[in-house]
Image (cartoon, rainbow, N blue to C red; front, side, top):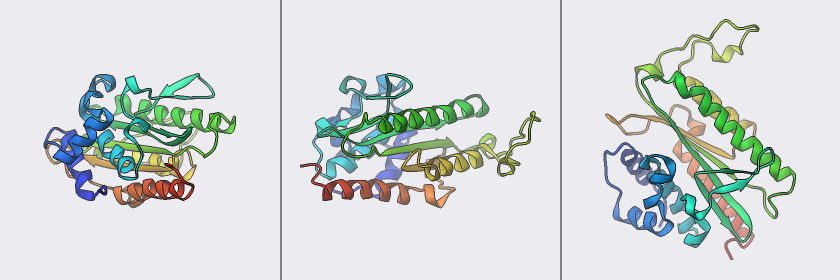
Length: 241
């Protein structure tokens, strides 16, 4: 089995409730416990994305017990500035943090209400774990972090947002940008600064769930390639054994 572009588009459609998962994906969801994840995440939409990501690792030979998608399985990872933090998908095998994913979204109509929260969550999670890794709390192999973000496509997320007149001028890159533009810049910088090893950023909507990938380096093709590169790297080291 391989994770295909069609799997990705089907999962995104299912996120909006527009399509049922294929039987193969349903079996994977059951194997890793994603079918009950909704009560943990406060809404089951992201269960289908968790299932999609789990498929990479099942296909690569990782046992279901190594792939965690529910709170009961233990999604918490140690931090440096706090004892631990819960991630959305965690793969641990033989004491190695194979991968950890944050799955987030921003919907309308009032995009500004949660925009800063999403930025701060992503930064805080990555900085905390990266610093913990420097403190040798993640032995053996360097942790690999992925960020998956869905922006609801709509007039409010496409419209340029005026920056407030603050005490000092903002970086010019932010001027005359929409929330869609801003999240593209944000995700690019997350990867450039190596806070996350890969990010996938798409816009989509319930009316038209087909993904719009505004930034090529953040599209599904690059994201899946990065996951597969991590799997190949660990395979060459005998993981999973």
